[in-house]
Image 1 (cartoon, rainbow, N blue to C red):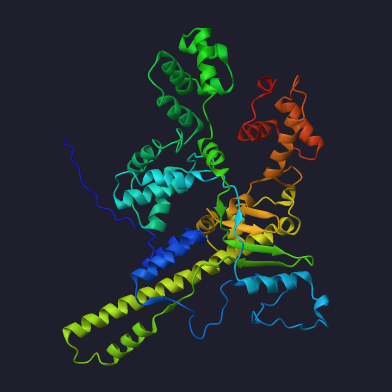
Image 2 (image 1 turned 180 degrees about the vertical axis):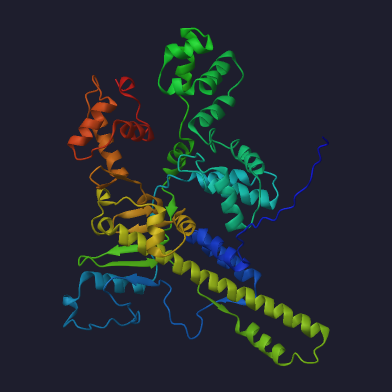
Length: 489
């Protein structure tokens, strides 16, 4: 029987999320820390004559818009400080006087802070030396910004592709992402941009001069990585057909590799007391009042140029019977004024989003901001903040990336406040950060002649009120880079 073939045409509906130019501008401004925002604003003022510094009339808002609990905004002038309900100045609470003094000074102090994530800027400097298209450079910067503090890339490529499409308007392929990631992996220090510990070690080995020892190390990490992490000497020797001497020499060399290249670079470069300019200022007073403000000390207020708006009004009124030159002038004026107004709106939306996000973090971590005790930090993930703030998770991620907050207890990266939670069988939620701290204390104080096994650590933690399974102990121990018991002797 003759067989035939037929073609069937089907229709599939696909929904693609696209952002308007204004939304893209808001997203880009949201990602910028305060210092970079200042530079971006000054650049925009230079590029657009319809935009200028100065207060919008009749807007009387202060530079540092404050969120406060149980406290009105201070609308008094810098010259006079009303006693209000207080009979004399001695009765005024200290925090009121401090707030008045700050308003007179008008400048937030720059506090030296050792930045342990300085490798981001170092990588961007190396990126400038690469010959890339503008789109490739944008992708590379996004990849660098997606690295963890240890310098590894733990996001999967599919997620990065989606984020680039939604927030940068860049539609790329996994092949192109891998190609650009390989460029970053050639940066210093060796191991940067690796997607796993195994790849991190292999990248470092590959930079060594060719030798028989190098090949053995590549085989150990490439073919026997699990056995290597478990120190299964006999299995590795048997599997690779090498001698014990070759194994010992290779392992001695491998233990010198750095599993966290980003952190090591931060430690080496960040001890110079770099100036960190906080994006937020959170202050706690004796009556448990917490105030939040944006650190806008050097961020100029923006307004439309009166000259441009008047010219636009004039051309608009006389647009009938205009010459081509006049119409072109009208189009130019309108484009510049629209762009300036869009930029002003984007800056305002950025400020509102930042304050809303930080306020949600304060609400969740209120006990920490009152006491400054790290053990009081609650388990908190991006979703928790997003739900409280009424914002998208990706928006919270952008706000928390490379932003800092100044508190009564020091300056912290916003990432500091995020940690996973562990729920016990009784339904009690415990902070993973706190569990790791107790675990490290147990290891630090153990008998080095007879270190705790994971089972013994689990039992010790249980007696301290942290009932977690042995396999969970092993996972947290590995995340803390604490070796197994037999290697801690």
